[in-house]
Image (cartoon, rainbow, N blue to C red; front, side, top):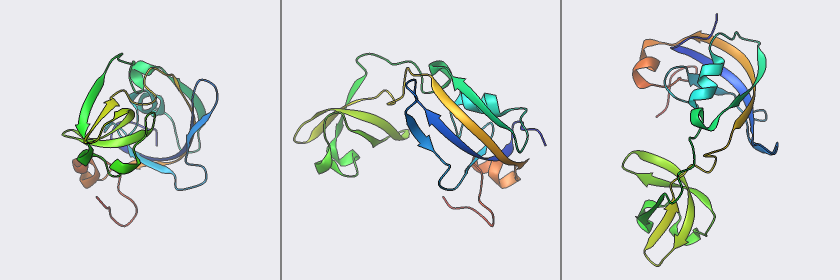
Length: 160
């Protein structure tokens, strides 16, 4: 079955930056399972998956506009420390998640005060091309419940 919208794809992938440094790899763990069309991965990778079959192995470079976006200079926002899971451990330059009204977001710590934290809201990989090496393990039609929930479920059910 070819990968199309509303397919569930299980795959291994490696993500490297422009210098070839490994950023993420699923090779030593569980494969990623995504629902194509639900933005479970960056848009450019989702586009590159379409038309492939189980067993395909390929490389793709995703431009910043289809990855984590272009960098926005000066995009600094201030948050109360209560929005961070470990506020006492925050250090300038650290990449961490912050709870926002839109959900969890990866940011870089810019300044740490006694009660407030200034963060660079750009994703740490914003402005960079993303180099993926992908191996498609299997492809199947999504179940109605997966489409309704917007993500793939594991065998035997799901956890939220």
